[in-house]
Length: 86
Image 1: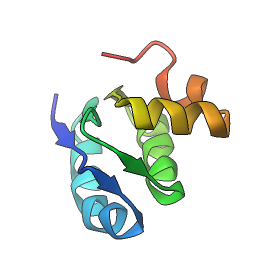
Image 2 (image 1 turned 135 degrees about the vertical axis):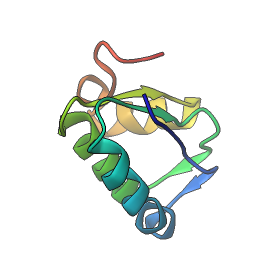
Image 3 (image 1 turned 135 degrees about the horizontal axis):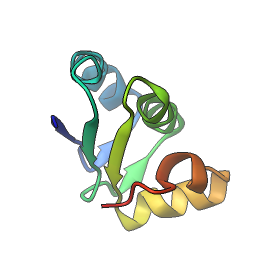
Image 4 (image 1 turned 90 degrees about the horizontal axis):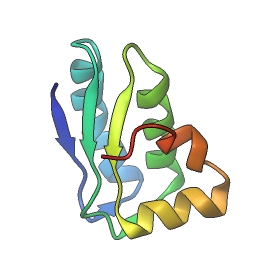
């Protein structure tokens, strides 16, 4: 299972930089996303994570406290983490 590690700051620029890596990895089965080091996460990255969860065999996300809080605030906890928190 390929793993993508997210940076501390997951803003639009980080999302655009990681998009090709996500696209390549999602074509090869399930994906592991290590977001444990994220301290700031924006809407674009949340959208990319949702897409990763819903594409192909999906993605397993290891979240940081900041990502968990962002998911809670936006109501995306079940979409991003249901049955997937490592």
